[in-house]
Image (cartoon, rainbow, N blue to C red; front, side):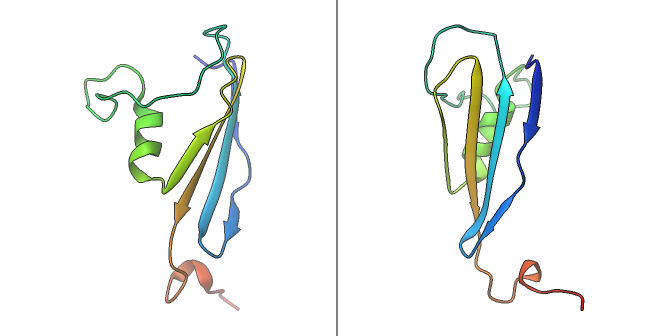
Length: 90
């Protein structure tokens, strides 16, 4: 279980939304890139659901490979034409 976690503000770009999640893990001491689990989206999965969801929905994603202070980023792409996100209620 992460010791602390948070999501940085969402960065809005013309091509989509970019989010970065950072947390202090401490579960392993070996630096390595994350890989989604094959069964991560199954209801019976006991772990790995978050990364499997990011992998399933994100256009692009990656991580910094650091074991202690992990940073995972992902891009949720969209077309702004006719999208409610591109309008304001002025």
